[in-house]
Length: 179
Image (cartoon, rainbow, N blue to C red; front, side, top):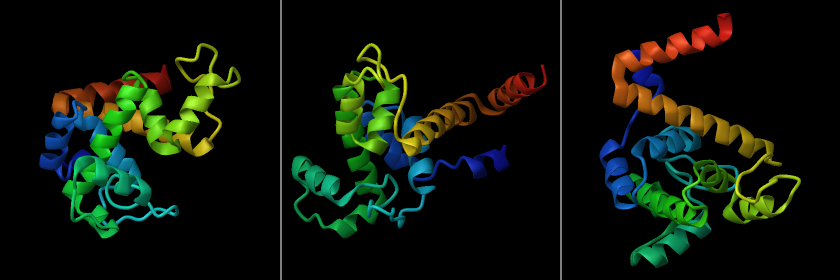
């Protein structure tokens, strides 16, 4: 089990649980997003200058700081784990409300932007029913969504179900491949 928890760490658990509770989010979702965004590196910087654990873009950080009433905000504070997680959870709460809790849309919007996801929902090429996405035109977002959903499931199994859940998961995966 130790090896599995090395692959799927749950660093900053207290902060994740605090802010996921405050914004009514699943802490395992936050852990899966952080794993995919920064691999739990609080000093991570993306090609697009997003920063910290949850890869908050500078413009989103400024917006969040204003809305959350953070008076002493500076872009360098995005490297502070507690603030970065707070802002990421705040933003996910906004996406949760915008997309009526539809997890795939929230995750896609976290990666590609809510404006893109809203446009895709209106385009019959990407959404037949304007409620779900049949196709995501950004390859990076398609891959991101798949990885976050996979890791979200794995975090639940590892940290909620424990060793029995991991063994059951491995068996299900083995059956898919060999039977």
